[in-house]
Structures are given as C-alpha cells and as structure tokens.
Image (cartoon, rainbow over all chains, first blue to last red; front, top):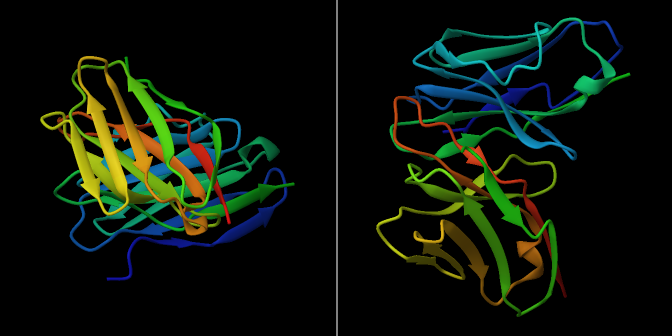
Length: 112
Length: 113
C-alpha cells in the first residue's frame, strides 16, 4: 500500500487564483481529515469526512475554502480565491477501523 | 474542554540523554492518547499510543507515562539519538462516531551528536 497520497507537493500561486489540493486515501479507510499546519497555529483540523459524508467543517476558515469527497478513496480541498494568509502546509490523513491516523506528505502552498 | 497543552515548545538533548515531553488534557472523556513524530517535509507519523487503563507503555526506546488523576501524559525517549531530532505532537481523542484527534502544539526536539 502506498499510503496517503497528496498532490501537488508544492504549489505556488498568485493571490486571487483558485487552488485545488488532492488526496487519495489508503484503501479500506473510511475517514478523511484535512489539516493545515503553520508555525503560528500548529496543526489545525479543517474538516473531516466519515464514509464520504462531511461530519464537521467548523475548522474551515471561511467560505473561500471548500472540500469534497466524491468517492471513498479521493478528496479535494479547494481555495477560491486564495490569499497570502492561506500559505501553509496542508495535510490530509486517513483513518481505518481503529484510531490510527495516517498522514500524507502534505502540500506546501505559497500564495504570493 | 478540547484542549491538549504540550510543553516544552523546544528541547535540546545530548546524544544518549533522556528526552521528556509533557502533555496535559482537560476532557476526562478522552480515552486514547497517541504521540506523533514529524520530520521536516513529511507528515506526522504515529509513534506510540496509550489508553487510560494502563499507566505506562513502552516500545523500544520510547515510553509513554500516563497519570489519569492528574490528566497528564508524557513521552520519554531513552538513549536519545540524533535521528530522533523531529517535532513531536501529543494528541487525544474519545470514542464516538468519528473520534477526531485534538493535537498539542508540538515540541521541536534536537539531539546533539
């Protein structure tokens, strides 16, 4: 198993542009989490899904952020329009039948 | 009620020494306490975890000590090695329909050769 796969690894964009981050879960896992990591705020949970259904999106900063899980193995996090303060490392993580959380390698986002 | 407080923010230890990182939680419903290790450019990875029915769990050089009455738990790294240099996060969660983790703020550990 290749683990949780995120793409792209790095994204540099200009303010106002749309950004889409992608995540492929580990096969058989049914929960998906999107986190944002910054030096100032550490690891912040943005949203999580259970069996493709969004359970809690209270961590999503504002309406510019949206996340989807169109099937059991794939999710996207979209920022539209992006702003410099969105610059961070974005992680997705998947969890199977126990509490173990497996993180992807993250997407380093820089909004200029 | 969901907070997990972690200290210290950074830690420097000599090779062969003991590294100790502490965490405190508020929600008594938490019943699963993992520690994650993160290397630069990588996502956090599960290192070791404990449930409140035991006071200590050891895996190799890594030990979790758990004090339920004090609502505290700590990670001890024995014989610390330069390869242990990473950021360590404690976390906590409780059984429920989704069981999301609450993370501490992280400790940057540097082990000097």
